[in-house]
Length: 400
Image 1 (cartoon, rainbow, N blue to C red):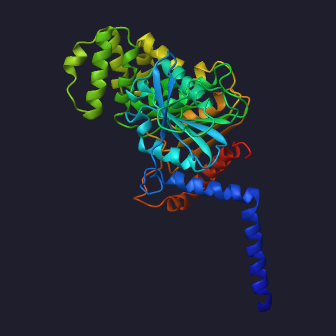
Image 2: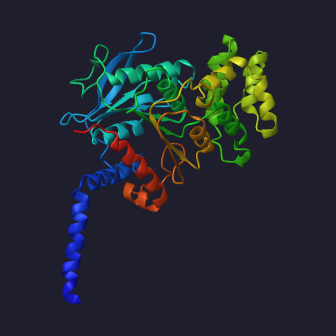
Image 3: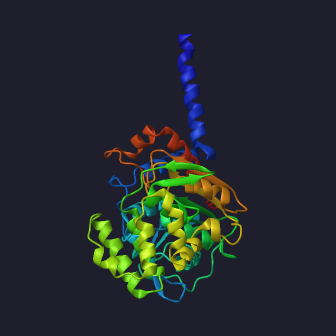
């Protein structure tokens, strides 16, 4: 029996080697490498270092000048485009996680475009965000390869037939899916990835203010980010008609974000009736009062939230496939929003959902400096779900 053991081990080694060298085997090895990189986000591993990205200029929806960073490997022709849309983050396209993702996907033959959205970077939300994302997608489609140098324009090129993926994080998930839902905006080979996305912003406000969220008649509790209500108040202040109310509510949001106990009595007293109703909605913590307070809120604020909610405003079915990822412990957007989005979104493609226990709000939970492969092994169920999504994304690339 012992004399057959070396031959059996050699045979097993050859089988594993053949599997690894096959197209399917290589694809899975590549996806595993990408998985480890994803688990490494937020940890300085040294792999994120590299030359600065090129910068392109393009026209915004009203002809304004806009910029985007472009990450790609100049030694290899890209096989797909990937646009990363930042959410309500003051760093915008310069967020360290976006920079790391740009370099990671560029190593896998993606032409990665990371635009700067002025409104979102200023922590403001509005219907114009849908147009901003749409203009960035159009600019990305005109890129065929790596820009030769910083400052390269994207305005005069014709569209190049490569698959295009758009990734939305948190708030930007709504504008991403609504921009792709415009006539002619998406093609059958395209796809969207929404991490920590939402179906209805009214329910996000409900969660941030009361800690409650609903799905199919069931009521759930959760830990909401304490400053989340004030971030969303500041972001929506611009929807009010009265300039003085807009300025006062934005100031209240900034103050309470920095210090939950900050004195806002003078600012509150300066508000008109519409402003007071909006402040009452965002200051409330009682789930039983939410619906009534929301009905009393300024109609312009409610209309903005509805216009940015895919479950209420997606005009036509998406031709693209949709990947939804959501952390079960998300303290800003409850995971039930992705469950509702999976059921409510209309698409001609496929919708895949991955709920993740090891993630909070669009990022891995702290692993105390652990390497990416260690985090991946600590969360095997999450890793399997993410691996399936990543393999699907890699498979979207055009053939060499």
